[in-house]
Length: 309
Image (cartoon, rainbow, N blue to C red):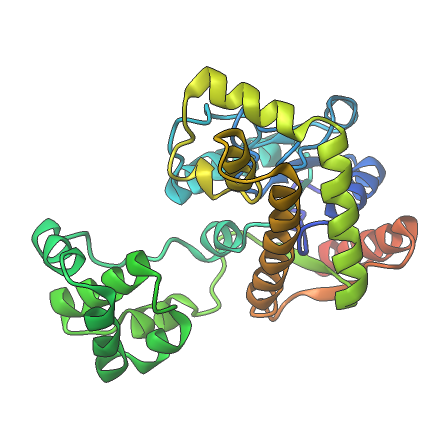
C-alpha cells in the first residue's frame, strides 16, 4: 500500500471482535494500529478495557495505549493532537494505519474536528448548578427542543452546558453541533463496521464479562485503588470499574456488581451503535462471519480505494 493510503477504520460496539479483525488486516497489509478508545489510554487498566495482549502488541505495533495514569484526566483534544502525530509519522514511514476502538466521540473529533463551542463561563455555570434539576430541565424544550430530546432529565452536566451555550451566544448547542456535522474530513479514510444481531451480541458481552472476571479484573481494580486511591473523572467513566469499586468499598456484593457490569456494557453497546450509525460512509460487515472473510473484504476494498485515489 502506498504512502497516501487512506486510514482503514474498523469500528463496532464493545465485544464485537474489532481487535481480532484489525490484527488480521494489519498482518496482511503491514499496518500499525491506532487505538480509538478513551479508556485504553490509561495504564494499569488492562483487563477491564480489553486492551490487546502483550503478544498482539509485539506482532503489530499499537499506538494511543498506556499514555497516562488512572488518576489523571485525558481530554479528547489531547487524543486528537497525539493521534494526528501518529498518523503523520506513519505516513512519513510509508506505513498504513488501522484506526479501531469503541469511542464515537474520538472518531468524530479525529476525522471531523473538535466541536468548537464557546468557552465555559464560571458565573453562569455556578448559577445553573445552584438550581434544582426539576427547574432546569423544563427550560431546555423551550429554547432547544432537539437537545431536550437527547439529554436525560438527570444529566446535569450536559443540561447545564446546553443552557450555558444559549445564555452566552443566543444560539442553541444543537444548531452548532449540526454545523459541526458538515461531512468534511481531516483524514482520508475507508470505513468498516461490525454489525451483530442484538441477542448474539448480548451473549458475547455476558461471556466476555465473565472471562474478564476470571482473568483478574477485580484484582486489577483493587490494585489501581490501592495505588492511586481514586480514578480521575475521565477514567471513572470506564464501564465496569465503578461497579467493582462499589464492591471493594463494601457497598455492593460481587454478584450484584458483575450483573450490573453486564447491564451497563449492553447499554454501552447500544449507545455506541446509535452513534456509529450516524457515520454514513461505513460499510457494515456481518460480525458473525469468519474473521478472515471479513479481513479479505476490507483488504480488497482498501486496495480499490487506494487505486482510485
